[in-house]
Image (cartoon, rainbow, N blue to C red; front, side, top):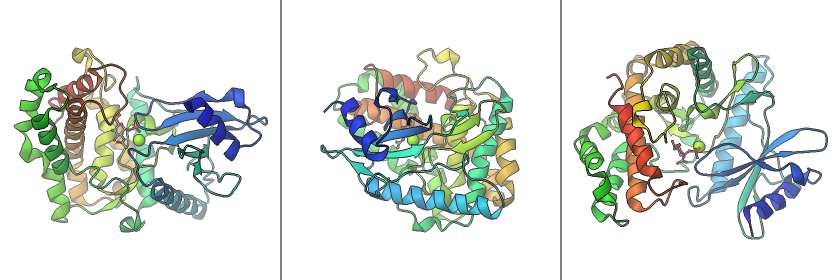
Length: 351
Ligand code: GN1
Ligand code: MG
């Protein structure tokens, strides 16, 4: 069955009176397939096919998502605020389940589209980074106190950079796609930094950093900004919500938000770290959640950016070496291009 036929089947399961001709692809995620849908009353929805090769237990992903969104909604209500545009809201299908399985066993879910707000992949104004910082800071603030250990670890070791390093070494050694010769310099650069790979994991093991609920994929495009005011409205893409450290969420936002170009820009000279964007994000972030962070968390935020950019370089290069088995790619060297931008950014980040 084609993806469009599957999407239509899912659409009818969640929204029986939706307009089939209004189904359109949405967003630029590298893992799930996302569509936008509409009902005759003009309401918008997001229909998404969950990539079960990446998320083998979609039921656990959905349980995590519902627990976290319920918790945030409840907290906002207690504070007298309307959660409608601030928290993603998932809908049950006509049989009452939040995941719909097509005849071919592909897995779908549906949420309300948040109107009047959009995702940005790059921003041209540091003021908007301040807003993005407030958005992710608010996410941390709302989830402070949530029992992190009760969430399923849907992708075990997701930000375990030590483990990522081992996987990279293995991929370079096995060289199944015959590509190691194309990236000798990158492989060498990473290998020389094996000790760095373990820094944040060690801090967590020593309990020098507390375990929190973290989003774990806080790229700039996962916080929606209001079309008119530019204010952060809502944090989306909650698949990877798991126990972690706030360093990861700060770091991934800097990786994408304080970078001058896209993660797959083939012209490396265009990749620059933007210190004023980083400062603006940090200001907004700490404004919302600074009060709940420990001194060690605050001090180590820059380390969060370095570790996540390093890890992302490892992950892209590992996938390149493995023959593009994880990330969607549009051309053969796409993952190599991505790894190179990350390394170019990494060397510019302040310690
Ligand atoms: C993937 O699919 P998307 O774009 O939300 C990946 C992130 C990476 C990102 C790089 C589950 O996220 O960890 O940072 O690509 N998500 C997963 O663009 O691996
Ligand atoms: Mg994601």
